Length: 169
Image 1 (cartoon, rainbow, N blue to C red):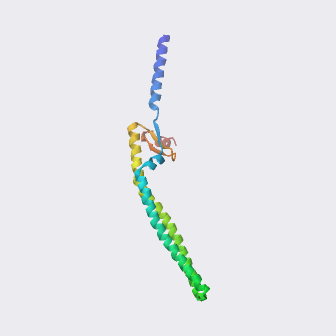
Image 2 (cartoon, rainbow, N blue to C red; image 1 turned 60 degrees about the vertical axis):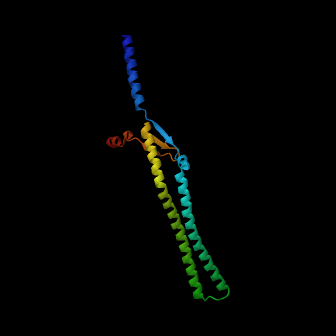
Image 3 (spheres, rainbow, N blue to C red; image 1 turned 135 degrees about the horizontal axis):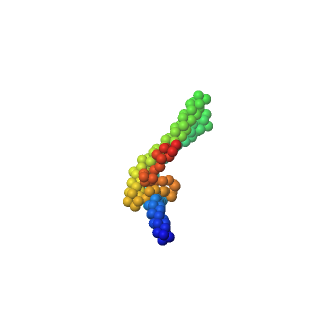
């Protein structure tokens, strides 16, 4: 009888252990910064972005050069006494307008660079995301984390307990 109880206990322990082993979730991680730094597409994107940025900076520099020339001409005319008070006021207003245009251009330039970066980076990130999901699916990972950001990049939908939590509420 004692042997039967021992065997029953052993079998019960084996069933519980087997159930616990099946319930284990396979988790993986990546370092997206390392992946992206080695992709030729990212290097090409950075080169394209730098070229785009350089073009915008040149245009901005032209605006600054025009402003400086206008300011220098006005100062020379003032020193020679060639400006009436009305002309001086008009030049001051024109220079202020040019300053505002330069500031607006700088803000627009930053916005354009960020938008261009997102436009160029999106297909690359989509490709990386597809690869992550493929590797996770093929290798049975329930979750894949990114060391660079700490974000979950892949989660097996069978582990989603959202509806259970909603039902509990």
